[in-house]
Length: 158
Image (cartoon, rainbow, N blue to C red):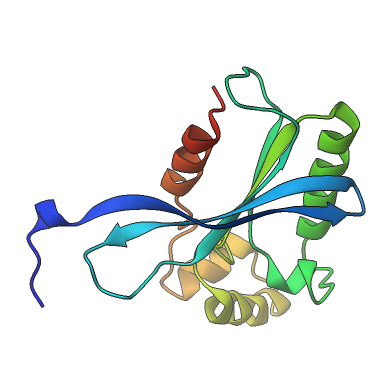
């Protein structure tokens, strides 16, 4: 189906929201969907905001923009310290009492899980992350932050 470019525009949708207890205290979890919607049923990946305290209208709010890392955060891979970075951010926000963690679903610097694992194989042969991506004809970093900006705007973080 052809849709005129003017009919497709990024749209931020709130898909769910609830207070979630964590090891670092309670956070309000807001699940967002951000993407180009043309009326079809396809949605882009959901992103998450973990919010502690009342951040709306506040300046200099502590914020971590974190990209998904299934290999570290779920499976405990030692190739990176993403899980530790995420937990340190939650811990610091809990200590301060106010802040936001934005969890963006853009695995492997935005190249996706399968390509990330392909790059891991090249890394095991001695290539660094950037070189491995280039050998696979992938960008050094394909992450985008439009969704993060829209989420912060919705949360009222200045």
